[in-house]
Length: 134
Ligand SMILES: [Zn+2]
Image (cartoon, rainbow, N blue to C red; front, side, top):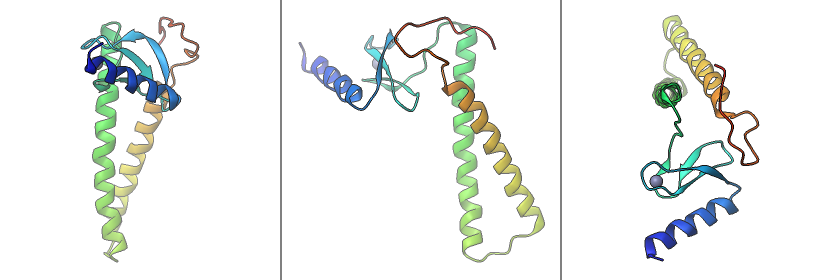
């Protein structure tokens, strides 16, 4: 066994100890077995976070998830700006307040969308099943 391989095995063991579940899928790049973390994230022990994609539709969904997460990070950064402005005692006019509320609504919506796709309904137990529906 090469040292690389051993490192991967150790990483998998660590993840399993942390409560991750081994998936039947493999990393498209290095063919390592993928794991699902308790958070629902799917990771390759070598490449970190990956999206499992079985078809075109799923690819679109995975891409959307990436976009949503990026968007959320961007908005949170913005909100940080508002937060520090407010905590410095800066004046918050009505327009700014409305902006903040809109950003918060956006985050809420993103969270809802992400939550909907982070829960792979009843796939625990190892048996992969085709993800139909919307
Ligand atoms: Zn990989």
